Length: 80
Image (cartoon, rainbow, N blue to C red; front, side, top):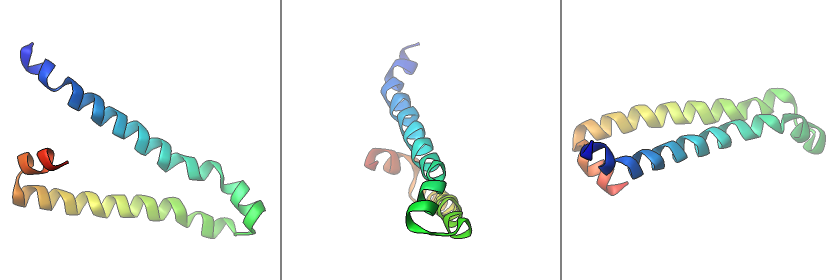
């Protein structure tokens, strides 16, 4: 029971980060028609926004996993 109390703030920070990331990832697609009507950009080009976002996120996740394995979890957690 004592062990779980030590990590409560960390878990709350992680959950807040997940929510923030979900909002930022899903906000731009809600504005697709606004972007199209205001700026005259085709939906094909607008669709590249979330594609680029998710592709970048995937590549960074793979790179970060290799980086963490190389230097260790503790150093990454403390530095973050």
